[in-house]
Image (cartoon, rainbow, N blue to C red):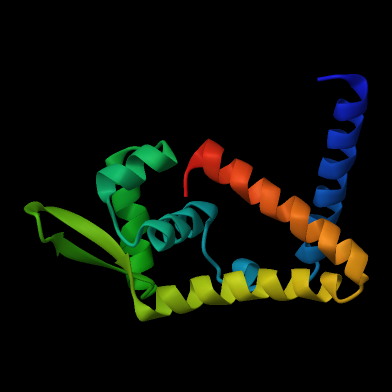
Length: 148
């Protein structure tokens, strides 16, 4: 990268960190859920995929299957996930979100969107056009790099 691109990238990332820091001062279900980071990661991974096996979760978290079993046990105790037999392979158990787990994910997502909405309410129409164009392109690049 050339110097100008590096400096612009640095400033954008610094601004993003500042936004995240400001958001962290707000009450959010993300922080009030009393879940560990790994538990939140499992909830979010299962939310994105619909369901997951212990092996899949173990791979994505980079931990042993026994560790995943303990994490899932605690999430079951919290009523956020349930285990079900895989319809294609009865030897495999799949982890799925319960209605309470779905509600938690929805609350986390809604809180983040409301926070961004409150910022956008202060931007003029020209700035919103720019932001729309940039965010659309960033989404395209993210989908190309990481899939949908």
